[in-house]
Amino acid sequence: MMTTQKAARRILGTSAELWVNPQRISQHRGSKHPYTAVIRARYNTKLRRPITWLSRKWHPFFLKHSWLPEGTPIEAEPKYRRIADLIEKKSNYRESEWYVKLREEVRTRGSARYKFRRMRTEACVDAFFQEHVLPLIMTMERDGYQANPRDEHGTVLVGEDGCLYKTGGGSHRFYVARLVGVNRLPVAVIGVHEEWARAHGIACERSGLQQLPPLLRNLEQRYA
Image (cartoon, rainbow, N blue to C red; front, top):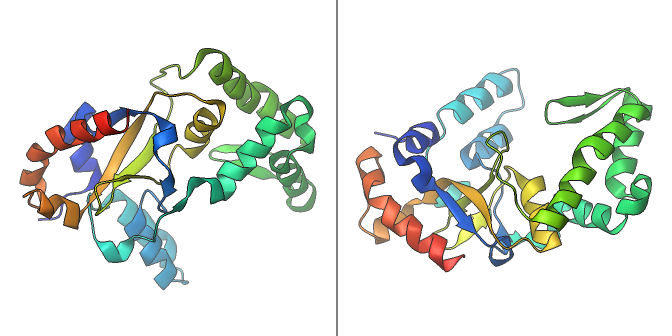
């Protein structure tokens, strides 16, 4: 029986939360819902939205190799480069690529969006940077990572080689931490490669989850 990400989170609890040094995670490997990304590429019809929703809701925790892209250096990720540029220009943030991009979306489309935040004026874009992004950067530079239960952890998966790979969830906070030199923060394991699980004698089903915590703790120590 398939084990979903949601079921795995419930069963594993805090065992799936690893405190790691973000500098040690060097590769990115696509979406936090890799099977959803595969499905979205197949459908370009009215069915795409409901199928996407269903595939995220019931997304498997044990990941097939065919769903995953090859790893790429985190430094090559557009989000990472965008945040690096902003940190470099934070005293003149309106010159940053990210600010310019959002401002142009407001001018040409009537609005810009970040997650659930919609910005319809340039003043809203300024408020987003002044009230959210820049304080995050300055706080991490000064105090390191500060735990907040409302914050989304960066997401990772365990690859076939037993390495942790960054995936597309909680990336902005993770990338800020990595860029300003924070050496400890939590990440959430959203899936493990089937080959890695089987190599450790773990059945790729719900019963196999009970064997994962010691292996995840070993990974946490390795990436500390």
